[in-house]
Image 1 (cartoon, one colour):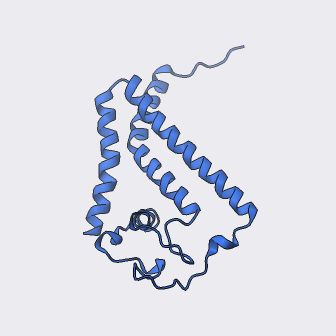
Image 2: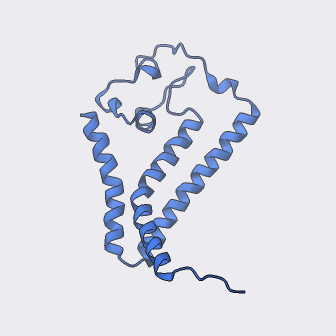
Length: 156
């Protein structure tokens, strides 16, 4: 059996590159998993008598539209009226969910939680055992700060 051995140096470089990309992407992965899980159950938008907290509206809008207009008090028009207490003309879509939709939503929510835990563990492992820890910390900070600063700059 003459199997080719993979190039060890190439694999080490790819693992290192993977660590840098993963540290940069991990904050966004966690953000999208968290906000996506909330959106699965429509916690980010008004329907029926439910009015979401402003922070959930803002996070949902940032996830879907890359916009933080809610920070300035301007409620997105697709979420119905603001805190005036008027009845929303949109029906409560959560009342029409079938058991199959609910089960699928639960499975997707579990997958989102698993991805968040996995990303968190990846951050911990990368910072605990990885070489070039300082550069990994810089990548993690950049992966957190760059999207946050762009979102805030776009809301100004």
